[in-house]
Length: 204
Image 1 (cartoon, rainbow, N blue to C red):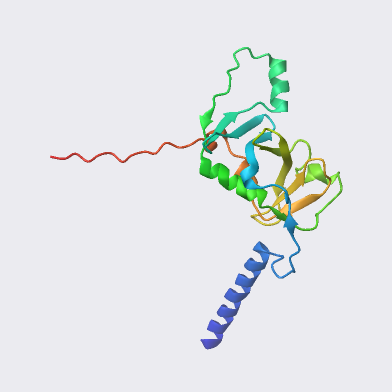
Image 2: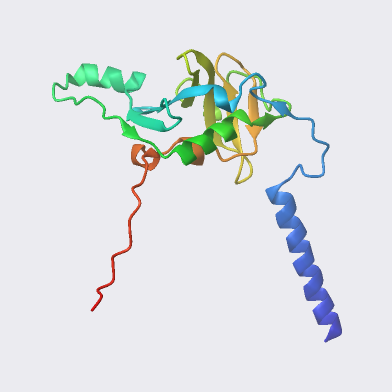
């Protein structure tokens, strides 16, 4: 009976080690990472544009540090609209955004750490979804000047990892964040949710 208990305990420990190594395969390797955006501070960001195929979102900081969200036309979306000649096209509506969600995204993006590039081969860009058709995140300062453009690619070998590439560069990096789940959200997900008060109880 004791042998059986020891045997089962060994199996549980082995499985635990396997899972730990699978989730973080490089945890025992010496880290030599650096900031992907060393000259960019989160407080400098005044607007963000997120483009993915025909979907586009613009987030803009207001005078009182609140954020606003607007649907934007992507380059591909504009070409399609031009071909279809949609005359009933409505102007995008500007709505207040979830400032906490936007702030979290900015902190994640400006805090990205990378090591050695996983590839510098341009032929790998489309394979890892960081080519010119991939998800594009453009960061602007308060004056509207473009500061950085990041291509967010496919999920990496672990659950919380993503391949990324800075626009104009061939270096492809792997970051320890699931970025698609942070930046590639539907328009309504960026909007500020109104607080719902609980119904008042009937008093006699």
